[in-house]
Image (cartoon, rainbow, N blue to C red; front, side):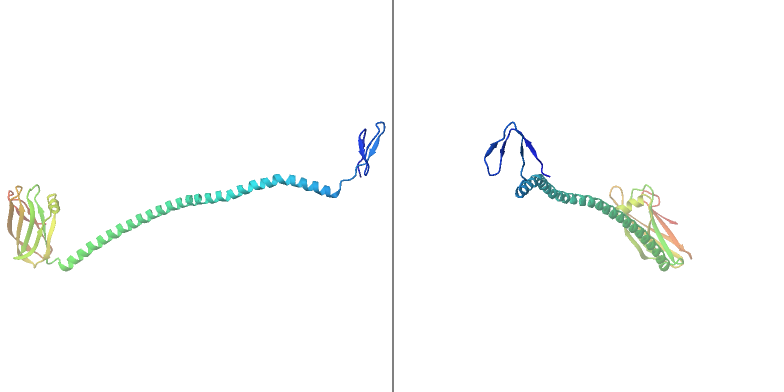
Length: 244
């Protein structure tokens, strides 16, 4: 329904005519014509443009933000990777250390096993090479507190050279601290035998010292262990023979 407006004391325009003045003492009825369709379309389009302009600006503002967000995500990804790589690297280092410790323990166990096997082999070799019925072993020791410096010892059994040994400084220190050296292991027949011992050394002043001792020993049907205790010229018995 068309809407009617009542206007009092105003100018009215009639189509195709000039201005007319409505008398003040009368009421005039003016009917408004409808707005053309083209004008309506234009106004509607204008309103749409006004309404869409803020949204378009907001979209433009959001697009750079959305572009920056992938960059931030990309920048965060290497950090996360580095954070993940650091614990992994630490775990790998700990695993490597544990593996190295395990390998060291295994190597030590293998070494101890090898040493034990070598000792057993040496014993078996001695039993095969030097049976108990013919085995003779000679040991060297030094008298306690003797200042002589031992250089070399030479042994002869029944006139044949059995051993000749030259001592180093460390070996001499070991003998002075109570160590014992097995200088000879061999085979001799049962019965009586002659042992000749030649000792070379130096005294405290640097003078050379040499002593020779001849001893007799008897070999029974069992291993024979002979011990020689050496001392300087100030001792009453520079070369002492004993059975061990």
